[in-house]
Image (cartoon, helix red, strand yellow):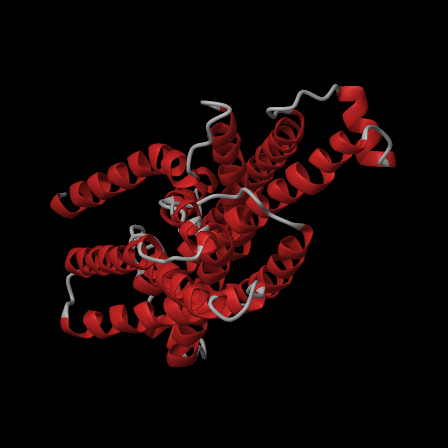
Length: 357
């Protein structure tokens, strides 16, 4: 009896110690992410083609006092761009996490599955049709068009998944669909007569430039609602990660749950594509890195960390895109691919080794 009691105490002690270690790791990861966010935000505001002193930047930020040109650069160009990189980067990473949960595969993501390309194609098509009759197109219309394109490609991928059960084949199918959608988009943009539509070529490669506070407000509303909905699904996601049968035994309606995941990931991907164009590899690389850093896949911790990690990742990549070859600006996807693609390759190699072992 005494031995059993001692074993129980030992087990409880070990469990408590492991719990403390996990919480300490979570806290450390969040502290690092927040510190990186603050640092990159400061760098994005202070670094640019126009040099503004630190004192002047502080005056402009807190009192809006200074030369009108400098005030406009900070408040109308740099700050909206930083905010959009934060919002859209977090949204893209969260969309990737939801898709990885849905397909139960770390290589699934909006860009790889062709969802972002479908959204891009629909946005280009809607803009070409509407700009013939109107001088401007509402941001809500663009988000709606991107959402329709995302759902269209997602539905197609789901239909393929019923026939193709091997995940590698499904991913290849998604990549091929993405190429087709990109080809259609480039065809539409190339042969469009309107100058504004021709300028969509830069957007079609991914960019955070030209953002306004109205764009920030619309994106913030959509993403905040989607983030809240995704976070509220933390318990069902955690149960689903343990297996479909386990989730059903815990009272999760699998069909409704899957629909919710697809809708939320499509909304998030569509919002990113509508405002910044398709951005590659963020939706795959960031969730994988965050889960590795946290040593857990618990949604309650991973969802906010993934959002913050995606935001920091995109803000850092945007800073490099702006400054690496200034005054020439790189497309954001060029930079995200450089840092994100190696993570995807290593993940695929690791999964292959685990299968052989």
